[in-house]
Image 1: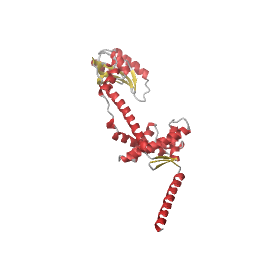
Image 2: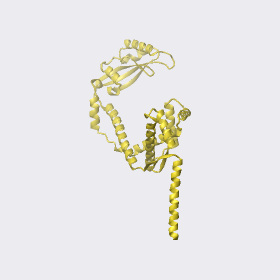
Image 3: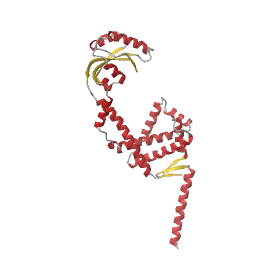
Image 4: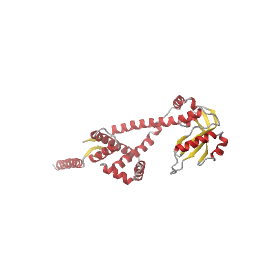
Length: 306
């Protein structure tokens, strides 16, 4: 009898404990648990408002759905990072948060105010950044070695992109007509002066001699460049020029630029194109692997929706 009473008492305690846990969850507005970690209505609301600020979602209900799924993903990512011993420090999150403010040409304080005024607890953005940073390290640690690219395939794809204009190797000089910051000098004025230079230009050997006849005109050696390393428009123009000629003026960030051809030779070089394709293909393949990895982790996670 005593054992039966003890068993019954223990059962009542367990039931009472579970009831209290359920009550606590309801009191906190827990909407989902992921591997035992709660996601509350407030977190979902904050994330939905964040998505609204970013222009995502077609309606409030759609944003709530997107917010819920992204928060679940975040918890799955954090859990996997923890399993692998990956920890993101507050300093890393602060740095990423500061970068967002900087990209917006704002301060952290102003970013906080912007979020708060739009119904978003700034911690919501910080939590998302923490999950993103953790996942980045997970992907690098677990998946980077799995992405294998075919060098033959990359070379064949690069070869398909080569046009006649991309079949040359150059030694170049740049002639730059500088527009000093705050000077008020217009690009059209400097372009006119660059065209005057161009009419007097007689080859790389005298490039500097001609430049000193103009104010704020500089000549620098660019060195050897293959056409595949140049912007397409410039490569196309240089292909039609010969040694001793100079390209037409182009407005650049700090002035007006022209390229002078000191040497030119036919050369088929796929190195630069292949490397660009490698980076693009590698990024795409890694992203696809990461998406599949996250899908598997979600399938194995204990996700309880209330």
